[in-house]
Structure formats: C-alpha cells, structure tokens
Image (cartoon, rainbow, N blue to C red; front, side, top):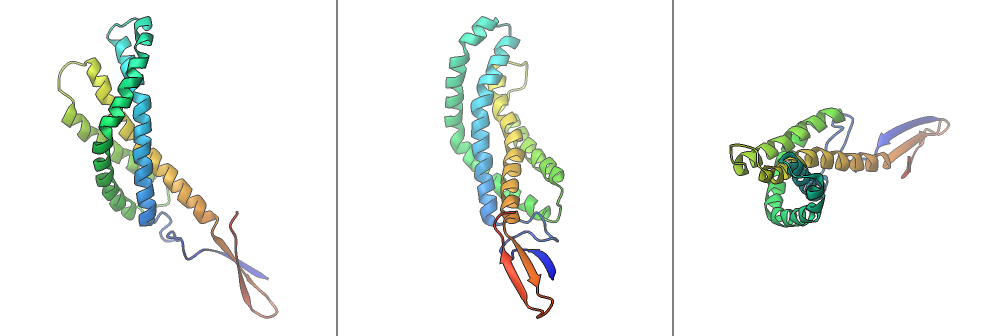
Length: 194
C-alpha cells in the first residue's frame, strides 16, 4: 500500500509558501499584538516608574510606598493609550501584511521574529521621538519608556503566538492518502489530531 501525506487544500501555507497567511490571521495577529501591548503596559509602567524612583534617590521604603500609585498610573496610561494604540495597530497591521507577504516564502521563525522585532523597534523609536523631550533623564522619562519597550516586545511576541497557533492548526489538517495496491483506488483520510 502506497501512503502519501499532504496539506489540506483549505490551508494558506504550501511547501513553496510555508509562512503565507490569511486576512483573518492578519487581523487576529493585530488584535493579539494590541492586547499584548496593553498587558505589557500594565506591567512596565509600575516597574519602570518604581525603578526610576530608586534611580533618582528615593529610598526603597519610599519606592515600595509608591507602588499602588504606580499601578493606578498604569491603569490611567492604558486608558490613555487605548485610542492611539488602536490607530497604530491599524497602521501596523497594514505594514505587517506587507512584511508577511514579502516573507511568505521564508520558513525560518528567527528571521520573522527579527523582522517583527525591528518593526516594533521602529514604532517605538517614532513614539520616543514624538513624545520624549531632549535633555537630562527625569522620572517622567521612565513613564514614557514603558510604552516604547512594550511595543518593541509586543510586536514579535504577538506575531510568534499567532503564527504558532496557525501552524498548529495546519498540522491538525493533514490528509493521509492511501493507494490500494490491488485496485489502484486512492482513499483520503482527514485527520484532526497529529
């Protein structure tokens, strides 16, 4: 009996284009990156403002006492970031679509991660240039640094999670073709768990 394994034709990815994606996957990826960014903001704003307090000479006890304020500041920062980050998400999704299309033939995950990290860094650099005032470091700069670092991390992390999910889904859609040696008939078996 001759056995062949092939990719289900419903999938976007082929051996020639192993990292092709659908518009639904692009949209899901954009939303994942956006949610990851907002989650990282909730983590980084209190972390960076606490570290900044220590850096400018606050005692550890004073710094610990300001943690609840830093968490409140993080919530406020996320609320302020909702609309601007949605706009950046829409623009970033367009850029990601172009990048993804250009890289659809490249199967190396590290190459994709490097490119999407660069995209996040470019978004962060533009943000930093717009909002950071040149001059000496101030505690306010730590507050501004949090979204920049969050964007740099969120873009590749969101891409990785989305790509991993899509590739795992593809792996569950493998067809096994069996050819009967006596009759020459080919039967296809759809498998959902590999």
